[in-house]
Structures are given as structure tokens and as C-alpha cells.
Image 1: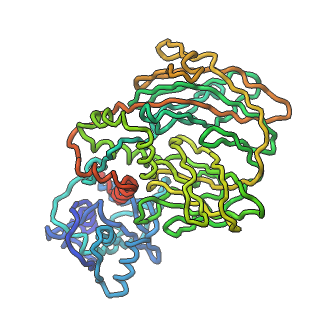
Image 2: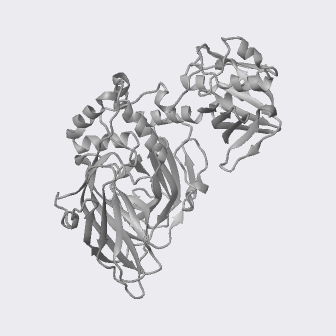
Image 3: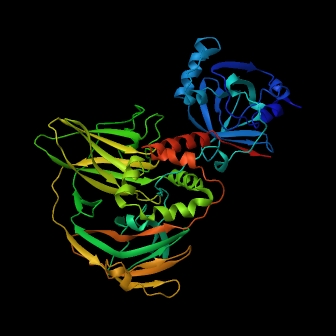
Length: 539
């Protein structure tokens, strides 16, 4: 067997965590010894894979080993954090070092270093190299174990989660498709996160204005999830304003005019990483709340200059929920096992206040804090907005101290949100003309007439009970006001109930952990670390 084929087999044998408490590099130009000794096998999912090429040193995530075409590929990420710290210590102390007993440190020293003579970049941003390009392998002794190969997926990570209060963070909820010249385009979602009747709420989303004349505005509301969806109100708000201002809305549906927003002078996360490039411009290059931190929530700190004699401002956030949050939610809920439906029904009577409190503690809602003379003070939370598109919202600010700068802290569960832009506007709000547009047509896919149900807030609902249910809605014409621009928002109110079923064991002991604040965030980070170290084997 060629030594390069042996290397491939080395990389596809799985173990569990070793009980060693120290780290030592085992160097080998001929790694067949790892195959011949059953006590020395390598795990494909708990290790850090490090690529060495000339002076480059990169970690590889989501590794794919393709035995058919004899290649290995992975997404390049910075080699930093605890794993880099231990690697540097190894180099300094000639191949071994002591290890702290913290489990996080145990994971950090599980490293496989691949020295290659060549690699190429793929169209999807990954790096790829052939087996024949591998010159040398270095493996930490902490990567040794005794188990045989097992295919690892998200469903079999051996990490479980649950919660005393069940709440969704995935983007279920009704989906909004807008008619753009005869083509329906997915644009946004309605009342994301309101997955129980107690969590029913109003929701405001800005829509692209495709109207150039007094035509009817058409859209389609679709249930594309395993849910029962209940919409009590659906209307459009056309806001007329001058070209020199932008109109945004806050969580409570109040309009704010934005004249000359400024960007932050400083922006860091709780890993002390500079994130100004990600949040200075709304350009889809977002910050993902993914600092490698042991704190219970991920944090962003932004600082703005404040003019003299200014006591109020408008914090502008452009953001959305991440698709990763949906993965976390699925893992979270699946661990209720065969008792999932029971847990959902049991928690339907939980008070709204208890549910919201838990959502805030776990970082499901984005928390907004301001620095005062007495320390950090929470002033607002941002409701879930879904993962379909970025949304811009305003958080009204009342500055309680007299400092020259304004310091803001944003807190999220690990990778639950994507933050594209943060700005501040100090201008006074100006008066606006608002036209409320009611549905004039609302026909369900089974012929139901939902015009009355959607027109008023009266607990008379448009009901979509299953995946595929939809309603086409037309609204009154939008006025065209000479010399004015218009911003169109969709205003809805409702809730939904998850109908998904799971099976298998209920992890009661793990469920109890999620009473603790921030536990869902810690679970997300642990899950992400496993997934990012994951290896796909192509036979």
C-alpha cells in the first residue's frame, strides 16, 4: 500500500477523547505505524487539521476526504486561539508541554499537521491538495484513542440539549413572496419566533417598492414549514418622505427619520477582534458573533462620538438571524426525542414573561446595552427577524451619562445573529405622511376568502395548517405623491405552532442544564466546533 493511501486511511478512523493530560508531537514521514498499532488511530471530527505550505499555516474546517480522486479539501480559517497557543508552546519547549485539565484545552491540543508541497483553491473558497502532495504528518499524542471508525453526523455527536421552556430560534414562520413583474420572489418572514399563542406579536418589515404607478401591490404568504400558522392582521404601511431622509421603524412600530448616520469609531468583540470592517457598511459582509470566548454570550462593543448637548440618538442595526441558528434549533428540539410533542403542549401554558426571560438569557433575542455611570444597562431587545434577508431597525437611545463617547454593547447567543451594519443618527425625527393599505383580495389555495380575517386585529385568523398552504393577497393602490419618496412596510400580527415530530430517547439530564442563562449559546459553540471539525468521507 502506498504511504499516501495510508495517510488517507489514517484520517478516516474515529476515536473518542483521550484521557491524557499532556501534549506531545509524534512526527512521522512514514505514518504507516499509526495503522499497524491499533492504539494509535486518528479521529476525523475532534481534531484540528493544520495545513503547512512553505511559510503558510492555516487550519482546515469542514474537511472532505475524497478517496475516489485522492484529494483532501477544507475551508481555510485562521489558526488561532487555544490551539495555536499550544502549538507555539510545543515549538518552544521541544515537542511537549503541560496541559490544563479544562475540557476546552483538551480539545485544543487534538491536532493533525499536514505538510504539503502544493495545493489549489476551489470555486467555493476551499483549499484542495492531492494525497501525493503530502510530505509529512505530525500528530499530537492527545489524538490517540482505541475505538474503530464511526461516521459522525450532527445527529450522533454525543452532545445533547434541551430546555425547561421550549422556544424556537430557527426561521420557521410564514414566508413572504412579493410579485415583481409576474415573478414571486422570497423577501422576508412574518413574526419569527412567535411559536406559541402567548408569543403572538406585531411585526414590521420594510419591503422593496416595486410600485411606480397606482397599481395594486401583490404578495403571497406561504407556509413552507411543518407548522400551523395563524395570522390575525396583515396590512401595508406606505410612508411618504423627502428624498433626503431614510425611514426606519423600531420594535414597537414607531417611525424614525434618518438624515446623516455616522459609523462607530471603534468596534470589537469579546475576543478583542476588530470588527469595524464588518459593521461599517451594509454590504452583506457581516459579523457573526463567533468570537472564541468562554463567556455565556457573544458580545460586540461599539463606540460612537457624541456631539455636545446631545441627549438622544437613534442606534441603527442592519441584521438577520443566521442559518446556523436553525441547525442549533433542530439539534436542540430533536433531543426531546419521543416526548417532543408532550413538551410542546406542556409549555403552551407558560406565561409570556417567562418565555421572553428565557429567550433573553439564552441570547436568542439580541440584547442592546448602553454604558452608564453605574455600568452597563440593558435598554432594549431585538425580536427575531428571520434568516431570509437583512432588516434595518432603530433602537431609540437616551444617553444617561455626560461622557464624550457613547458605548454600546450587543449580546447574542453564539452565531445566532449576523450583524451587517451599526450606525448612529442624532437628528430629530420629522413628521411623515402614512397611508394604511388594507387587503382587497386574499384568496387561499383551497379557495378560502381571508380578507376579513386579515383586515383587523380581532383574533379572527387566516389559518395555514400545513406545509404548502398559501394565500395570495392584493392591497389597495399606493398613492403617488409628487416630490415625495415612499417607503413600504408590511405590518403583521400572529403566531405559529411547530408540528415537527421526533423520536428516540429523551435526554432529561441534559435538558435540566438549560435552566442556566447562556447554556443554549454554549451548546451552539460546542456544536459548531464539532461541525467545523467534521470530516466527510467520499468512498
